[in-house]
Image 1 (tube, rainbow, N blue to C red):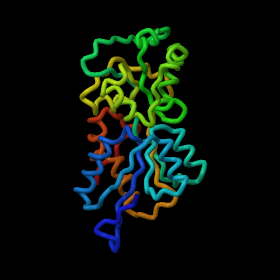
Image 2: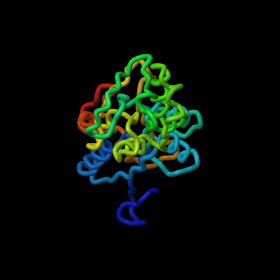
Image 3: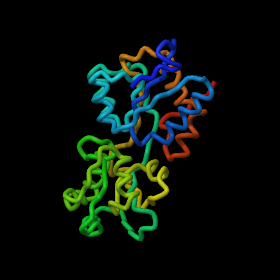
Image 4: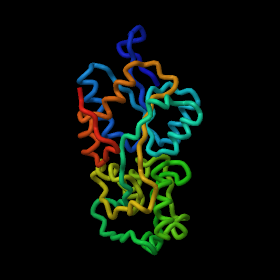
Length: 249
Protein backbone atom coordinates (compact mmCIF):
# COMPACT_ATOMS: atom_id res chain seq x y z
CA UNK A 1 0.00 0.00 0.00
CA UNK A 2 2.82 2.40 0.83
CA UNK A 3 4.63 3.75 -2.20
CA UNK A 4 8.09 5.14 -1.65
CA UNK A 5 8.37 8.51 -3.33
CA UNK A 6 11.15 8.54 -5.86
CA UNK A 7 12.07 4.90 -5.44
CA UNK A 8 12.96 2.47 -2.69
CA UNK A 9 15.93 4.52 -1.48
CA UNK A 10 13.91 7.72 -0.98
CA UNK A 11 14.20 9.34 2.44
CA UNK A 12 10.54 10.35 2.53
CA UNK A 13 7.47 8.42 1.51
CA UNK A 14 3.88 9.17 0.64
CA UNK A 15 1.39 9.88 3.38
CA UNK A 16 -0.98 6.91 3.25
CA UNK A 17 -4.58 7.80 4.02
CA UNK A 18 -7.39 5.30 4.57
CA UNK A 19 -10.58 7.26 3.89
CA UNK A 20 -14.31 6.64 3.66
CA UNK A 21 -15.45 6.25 0.05
CA UNK A 22 -17.72 9.29 0.25
CA UNK A 23 -14.68 11.54 0.74
CA UNK A 24 -13.12 10.70 -2.61
CA UNK A 25 -13.78 13.79 -4.73
CA UNK A 26 -13.10 16.33 -2.00
CA UNK A 27 -10.09 14.54 -0.57
CA UNK A 28 -8.56 13.97 -4.01
CA UNK A 29 -8.75 17.73 -4.61
CA UNK A 30 -7.40 18.59 -1.17
CA UNK A 31 -4.54 16.11 -1.56
CA UNK A 32 -3.59 17.53 -4.95
CA UNK A 33 -3.56 21.03 -3.49
CA UNK A 34 -1.31 19.96 -0.60
CA UNK A 35 1.05 18.23 -3.02
CA UNK A 36 1.30 21.38 -5.16
CA UNK A 37 2.04 23.43 -2.06
CA UNK A 38 4.55 21.11 -0.38
CA UNK A 39 5.86 18.80 -3.09
CA UNK A 40 4.89 15.83 -0.91
CA UNK A 41 2.49 13.15 -2.06
CA UNK A 42 -0.60 11.48 -0.68
CA UNK A 43 -1.72 7.93 -1.42
CA UNK A 44 -5.38 7.37 -0.55
CA UNK A 45 -7.19 4.06 -0.21
CA UNK A 46 -10.97 4.51 -0.36
CA UNK A 47 -13.46 1.98 0.99
CA UNK A 48 -16.23 1.65 3.55
CA UNK A 49 -15.15 2.79 7.02
CA UNK A 50 -15.72 -0.66 8.51
CA UNK A 51 -13.43 -2.27 5.91
CA UNK A 52 -10.70 0.30 6.50
CA UNK A 53 -10.84 -0.05 10.28
CA UNK A 54 -10.52 -3.82 9.99
CA UNK A 55 -7.59 -3.45 7.55
CA UNK A 56 -5.77 -1.16 9.97
CA UNK A 57 -6.45 -3.66 12.74
CA UNK A 58 -4.92 -6.38 10.55
CA UNK A 59 -1.73 -4.34 10.18
CA UNK A 60 -2.26 -2.40 6.95
CA UNK A 61 0.30 0.45 6.85
CA UNK A 62 -1.89 3.55 7.01
CA UNK A 63 -0.84 6.92 8.44
CA UNK A 64 -4.27 8.52 8.68
CA UNK A 65 -7.79 7.14 9.12
CA UNK A 66 -10.82 9.17 8.03
CA UNK A 67 -14.10 7.51 9.00
CA UNK A 68 -17.63 8.36 7.87
CA UNK A 69 -19.02 7.80 11.34
CA UNK A 70 -18.03 7.92 14.98
CA UNK A 71 -18.64 4.21 15.58
CA UNK A 72 -15.79 2.94 13.42
CA UNK A 73 -13.39 5.52 14.81
CA UNK A 74 -14.43 4.34 18.28
CA UNK A 75 -13.73 0.79 17.13
CA UNK A 76 -10.22 1.83 16.11
CA UNK A 77 -9.68 3.80 19.31
CA UNK A 78 -10.85 0.97 21.57
CA UNK A 79 -8.27 -1.32 19.98
CA UNK A 80 -5.42 1.13 20.31
CA UNK A 81 -5.15 1.67 16.55
CA UNK A 82 -5.06 5.48 16.58
CA UNK A 83 -3.24 8.28 18.37
CA UNK A 84 -6.12 9.64 20.48
CA UNK A 85 -4.58 13.09 20.90
CA UNK A 86 -4.66 13.55 17.11
CA UNK A 87 -8.36 12.71 16.71
CA UNK A 88 -10.64 15.48 15.41
CA UNK A 89 -14.21 15.64 14.17
CA UNK A 90 -13.66 17.25 10.78
CA UNK A 91 -16.81 17.18 8.66
CA UNK A 92 -20.57 16.75 8.58
CA UNK A 93 -22.85 15.51 5.81
CA UNK A 94 -26.50 15.13 4.84
CA UNK A 95 -28.43 11.96 3.99
CA UNK A 96 -30.49 12.04 0.79
CA UNK A 97 -32.62 9.84 -1.44
CA UNK A 98 -31.48 9.78 -5.07
CA UNK A 99 -32.94 8.57 -8.36
CA UNK A 100 -31.49 8.31 -11.86
CA UNK A 101 -31.28 11.68 -13.61
CA UNK A 102 -34.61 12.55 -15.21
CA UNK A 103 -36.66 10.18 -13.06
CA UNK A 104 -40.18 11.50 -12.38
CA UNK A 105 -40.32 9.76 -8.99
CA UNK A 106 -41.53 11.92 -6.12
CA UNK A 107 -40.96 10.75 -2.55
CA UNK A 108 -42.26 12.81 0.39
CA UNK A 109 -40.01 11.67 3.23
CA UNK A 110 -42.41 12.00 6.13
CA UNK A 111 -43.49 9.58 8.87
CA UNK A 112 -45.78 6.84 7.55
CA UNK A 113 -44.50 6.98 3.97
CA UNK A 114 -45.14 3.75 2.05
CA UNK A 115 -41.79 3.53 0.33
CA UNK A 116 -42.37 -0.13 -0.50
CA UNK A 117 -45.28 0.80 -2.77
CA UNK A 118 -43.18 3.44 -4.50
CA UNK A 119 -40.48 0.86 -5.18
CA UNK A 120 -42.96 -1.73 -6.42
CA UNK A 121 -40.94 -4.72 -7.57
CA UNK A 122 -37.68 -2.78 -7.64
CA UNK A 123 -34.93 -2.46 -5.07
CA UNK A 124 -33.54 0.29 -2.87
CA UNK A 125 -29.75 0.76 -3.08
CA UNK A 126 -27.98 1.32 0.24
CA UNK A 127 -24.67 0.63 1.92
CA UNK A 128 -24.68 -2.52 4.03
CA UNK A 129 -27.08 -1.63 6.86
CA UNK A 130 -25.13 -3.40 9.61
CA UNK A 131 -21.67 -2.10 8.79
CA UNK A 132 -21.39 0.71 6.23
CA UNK A 133 -22.03 4.09 7.91
CA UNK A 134 -24.36 5.38 5.17
CA UNK A 135 -26.31 2.13 5.38
CA UNK A 136 -26.62 2.40 9.15
CA UNK A 137 -27.77 6.01 8.91
CA UNK A 138 -30.23 5.02 6.16
CA UNK A 139 -31.75 2.18 8.17
CA UNK A 140 -32.13 4.44 11.20
CA UNK A 141 -33.86 7.07 9.06
CA UNK A 142 -36.24 4.54 7.51
CA UNK A 143 -37.07 3.14 10.95
CA UNK A 144 -37.82 6.66 12.15
CA UNK A 145 -40.18 7.20 9.21
CA UNK A 146 -41.85 3.81 9.76
CA UNK A 147 -40.73 2.58 6.33
CA UNK A 148 -38.05 0.04 7.20
CA UNK A 149 -40.28 -3.01 7.73
CA UNK A 150 -41.82 -2.51 4.31
CA UNK A 151 -38.54 -2.19 2.39
CA UNK A 152 -36.06 -4.35 4.32
CA UNK A 153 -36.56 -7.23 1.88
CA UNK A 154 -36.17 -4.89 -1.10
CA UNK A 155 -32.76 -3.50 -0.20
CA UNK A 156 -29.76 -3.99 -2.49
CA UNK A 157 -26.92 -3.74 0.03
CA UNK A 158 -23.61 -2.45 -1.33
CA UNK A 159 -20.08 -2.67 0.06
CA UNK A 160 -19.81 1.11 0.38
CA UNK A 161 -21.85 4.21 -0.32
CA UNK A 162 -20.25 4.87 -3.73
CA UNK A 163 -21.19 1.35 -4.83
CA UNK A 164 -24.79 2.07 -3.81
CA UNK A 165 -24.65 5.33 -5.75
CA UNK A 166 -23.41 3.47 -8.83
CA UNK A 167 -26.44 1.17 -8.80
CA UNK A 168 -28.68 4.22 -9.14
CA UNK A 169 -26.39 6.03 -11.56
CA UNK A 170 -26.49 3.01 -13.91
CA UNK A 171 -30.25 2.70 -13.61
CA UNK A 172 -29.98 -0.67 -11.87
CA UNK A 173 -31.96 0.65 -8.89
CA UNK A 174 -34.66 3.33 -9.08
CA UNK A 175 -33.82 4.81 -5.68
CA UNK A 176 -30.82 4.87 -3.36
CA UNK A 177 -29.81 6.30 -0.01
CA UNK A 178 -26.48 8.14 -0.12
CA UNK A 179 -24.86 11.27 1.19
CA UNK A 180 -25.56 14.63 -0.40
CA UNK A 181 -21.88 14.80 -1.34
CA UNK A 182 -22.18 11.58 -3.36
CA UNK A 183 -25.17 12.95 -5.26
CA UNK A 184 -23.26 16.14 -6.04
CA UNK A 185 -20.37 14.06 -7.41
CA UNK A 186 -22.47 12.08 -9.91
CA UNK A 187 -24.21 13.91 -12.78
CA UNK A 188 -26.32 10.84 -13.54
CA UNK A 189 -28.40 11.06 -10.38
CA UNK A 190 -30.80 13.58 -8.89
CA UNK A 191 -31.71 14.24 -5.28
CA UNK A 192 -35.35 13.26 -4.81
CA UNK A 193 -35.60 14.16 -1.13
CA UNK A 194 -33.53 14.93 1.95
CA UNK A 195 -33.97 12.91 5.13
CA UNK A 196 -34.90 14.94 8.22
CA UNK A 197 -31.86 15.53 10.39
CA UNK A 198 -33.69 14.15 13.41
CA UNK A 199 -34.32 10.83 11.63
CA UNK A 200 -30.77 9.54 12.11
CA UNK A 201 -27.68 10.15 14.28
CA UNK A 202 -25.59 13.16 13.30
CA UNK A 203 -23.29 12.37 10.36
CA UNK A 204 -19.78 13.14 11.57
CA UNK A 205 -16.44 12.36 9.93
CA UNK A 206 -13.66 11.93 12.51
CA UNK A 207 -10.02 11.80 11.41
CA UNK A 208 -6.98 10.57 13.35
CA UNK A 209 -3.38 9.52 12.93
CA UNK A 210 -2.85 5.80 13.26
CA UNK A 211 -0.88 4.47 16.21
CA UNK A 212 1.74 2.88 13.98
CA UNK A 213 2.37 5.91 11.76
CA UNK A 214 5.93 7.22 11.85
CA UNK A 215 5.59 9.57 8.89
CA UNK A 216 6.12 13.16 10.09
CA UNK A 217 4.23 14.49 7.08
CA UNK A 218 1.00 12.80 8.18
CA UNK A 219 0.39 15.25 11.02
CA UNK A 220 1.11 18.14 8.67
CA UNK A 221 -1.46 16.87 6.18
CA UNK A 222 -4.05 16.39 8.93
CA UNK A 223 -3.42 19.96 10.05
CA UNK A 224 -3.84 21.14 6.46
CA UNK A 225 -7.24 19.44 6.19
CA UNK A 226 -8.46 21.62 9.06
CA UNK A 227 -7.44 24.92 7.47
CA UNK A 228 -9.32 27.49 5.44
CA UNK A 229 -7.14 26.46 2.48
CA UNK A 230 -8.72 23.00 2.44
CA UNK A 231 -12.25 24.07 3.34
CA UNK A 232 -13.36 25.03 -0.22
CA UNK A 233 -12.66 21.51 -1.52
CA UNK A 234 -15.10 20.09 1.03
CA UNK A 235 -17.61 22.94 0.70
CA UNK A 236 -17.82 22.38 -3.05
CA UNK A 237 -18.89 18.76 -2.54
CA UNK A 238 -21.53 19.64 0.06
CA UNK A 239 -19.68 18.79 3.27
CA UNK A 240 -19.89 21.05 6.28
CA UNK A 241 -17.01 21.77 8.64
CA UNK A 242 -17.89 20.59 12.13
CA UNK A 243 -15.48 23.06 13.71
CA UNK A 244 -14.22 26.42 12.57
CA UNK A 245 -11.50 26.12 9.96
CA UNK A 246 -8.07 27.15 11.15
CA UNK A 247 -6.21 29.86 9.31
CA UNK A 248 -3.85 28.48 6.69
CA UNK A 249 -0.19 29.30 7.19
